Length: 293
Image 1: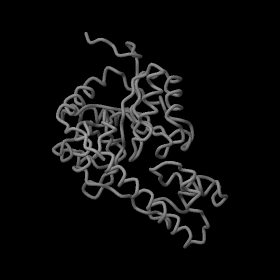
Image 2 (image 1 turned 135 degrees about the vertical axis):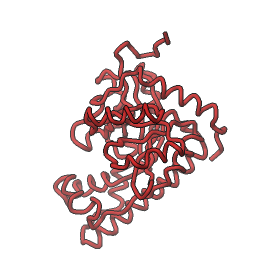
Image 3 (image 1 turned 90 degrees about the vertical axis):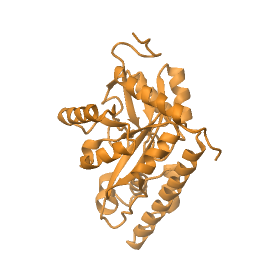
């Protein structure tokens, strides 16, 4: 029998999909750890969009709280014309090539914000670009920050109104995201020692591309997610078993920006993490040494 890790019990749980204020969440890394303890979690992963900035603080807070921490990231990719998200787990956050590519993604995000504000100005909506960046206070700003800035400036009454009037797909201030090729993203995560997992496949309606991603090196599926029903989770558990993929899951918590905090609403038994850890160990052995930024 394998020895238990610190913080684990026979019925301990993990939440492997969490966001902090370093992307589009509202909790700082330390607050996430406090919430994780409150929820009775033993393991958490921080998976901010195009950012690993919060991982060091989260790791320190987890160590102090007796939780296991898994460093992660979430990347936006395009496969067959569809937008998908890839989660990377156990990544080397100091990997020079990963950090340089993430910096490029962050610049693209910042330019996207500038274009959204410019489109709002053409609609006679006087939102200050500086107010969005000040509110975001991170290197990976996104649409939720624009929505929150619109509400704070009194230009919209709610986040829902901001998205419905201006920011949703095909609304007048919507700007497409920068998306990297799926195969390239998998290679990027692998060279940083990370396990590449397809996020919330039940929301993507893109099951047809999964076999191609597996051929490109995809390691796992996020079978458990806040918006996956039990039937959906079972469907992807069966698919993961058939394709030889690891299984992950998480709440996709963004703090208080989307209503009540979701952390802990999806609890993955820690016993399910062993294949993920084993795959990470394989990839670390195969990964190139970290390049200098």
